[in-house]
Image (cartoon, rainbow, N blue to C red; front, side):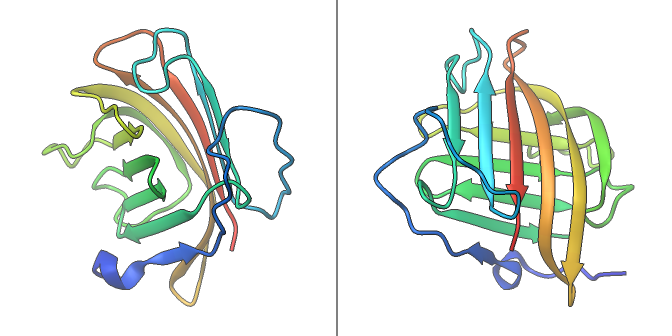
Amino acid sequence: MRSARPLGRMLVCLICVAAAGCGDGGPTQVQENETFIKLESDAGDFIGGGQTFNFTPATATFQVNYSGNYLYVTVLGQWTFDFRLPSSAPTLRNGTYTGAVLYPSADLAKPALKVSSPSRACTSATGSFTLQNVRYAADQLQDFDLVFEQHCNGAAAALHGTIHVRR
């Protein structure tokens, strides 16, 4: 079993050069072995404003931190993604986590999530996420796929996203 380590020691910095683009939703060529984040916002979703965003190493710098059952991903200077598995899952592992509440939550038995854009954050949230293809090497997180749905502030509209990390 992996022991929890401080986030500072668990930094996985994905070396990506930021280009002029910032995920304008235009067509994006993505390789299966390449890190990417894709966001699709329903009309009426507060966080994404009904838009689509695509981030690749050509358009953004990604950073991933994790500790135990907590995962933090950022598109530097733009978006932040927080995911915490329920306390029954002490480390990041494959699974579907429903009934998620806004991170951070005092109820550690429930999964939690929080996706924020550069100028918007939810005051309450519900949703779900699925973590797949989690791979560690020498106790370091290497790869994962995460698909999520977040409903902000009680809205029916949602932000849908895919985070695909390959190192």
